[in-house]
Image 1 (spheres, rainbow, N blue to C red):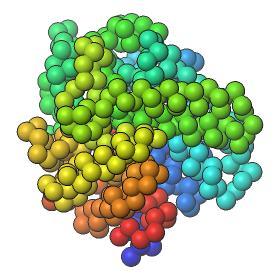
Image 2 (image 1 turned 90 degrees about the vertical axis):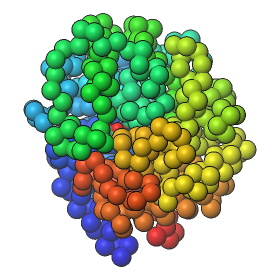
Image 3 (image 1 turned 90 degrees about the horizontal axis):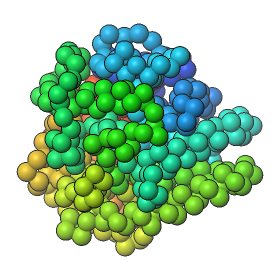
Image 4 (image 1 turned 180 degrees about the vertical axis):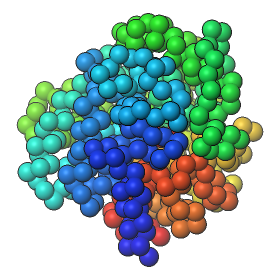
Amino acid sequence: MRQDLIEQARGVLRRNDRGAYTVPTHGLYPFQWNWDSALSALGFSHFDEARAWTEIETLFAHQWADGMVPHIIFHQQDDGYFPGPDVWDTGRPVPTSGITQPAVAGFAIRRIFDRAGNRTLAERKARALLPRVHAWHQWFYRDRDPQGTGLVAILHPWESGRDNSVDWDDAFDRVPTDGVMPFRRRDTAHANPAHRPTDEQYKRYIWLVQHFRSLGWDNAKLHDASPFRIVDPGFNAILIRSCSDLAGLAEKLGEMEIAEQSRAFATRGIAAMDTLWNGKLGQYACQDRALGALIDSPSIGGLLAAFCAIPEHRAQAIAERIGKLAQSARFLVPSHDPEAPEFDSLRYWRGPVWLIVNYMIADGLKNAGQRAMSERIFSDCIRLIEESGFAEYYDPITAEGCGGGDFTWTAAMVIEILSTQKAPA
Ligand code: GLC
């Protein structure tokens, strides 16, 4: 059974493999996505280490001069996706978007390096990637935390990876829509429109893109010029975890300067994370940086904070909070609290379960000694696959598989979980 699932998952990766990068799924997402690639590399690393390294190398080959790593790389022309390269207009030789995504590559590289069978290859690849990943982290703390708070802001909902989470409904409402170019969405031709973001939300997504474009994609200007500035605990936890993993890797490779600076980023970040603790919700929560206020939204972003080394009592509180969610969701971890009025079990990031987020939460809880909850989450991942196959995401109550099918990072997580956890199924 286990081996059978692994075989099926490899088949999904192979079908979405375009040679030097994978697409998240054919149709809906026909290009390379940033955090999809880093997490998918974990799956490849169990059966083709060279291919895993290539996935991440291709991503970093399109890093900008200032250190930013874009969220989409448009390797080839495809009219099935909007907004395409002409809308972003970032002026890159191979077109890319102009915003970023969760910085999970540092974590992925460290994990692939630590368990690599081919040590020579791993050392060569990790040594070459190390300064590039570090430059990305430096970019974050320079251009997305200009006040030096220790926490970075996202300037577009797509940067968070949790596109239309409830967390920024209010902040997003303040983004204007006047002057938005007329456009035709393509996502609704591939997925059920009732599960996708609304047209009103799409107009605001595009307004932000046009706004940043009018500023010449100059990252030194975008933070202060954006009406949308959110400090997302999950996003920051991923960055912090990558910084501390990179510090460890740099030490092993004798790159002491990178090690020290990465360690300093992580230490300062973990201390600052506590400013996002929302006592009322019993979890971390987003902060609206434009208003300087915490947002009362019980989403998975606050639980994903467990991916970095938060204090033990906080990790325990998160495990308890997830335990409460289990009273209303059959499958953990719903992306929004099922008891909250905005919960929607099928709509993008407003309720459904994503395996990649589950994996990161479970990994963090395991490190923090919260073994029972970690194992429960890993096993729910496999139960979902057994019921509904390799979907993009799942209804936390019925297990219905939604969004795109044959999904790369879902398959990668199955390989990763079944190959590394004792008996999750
Ligand atoms: C959606 C998700 C995002 C992901 C992308 C490709 O936009 O919200 O996190 O990277 O699809 O899978």
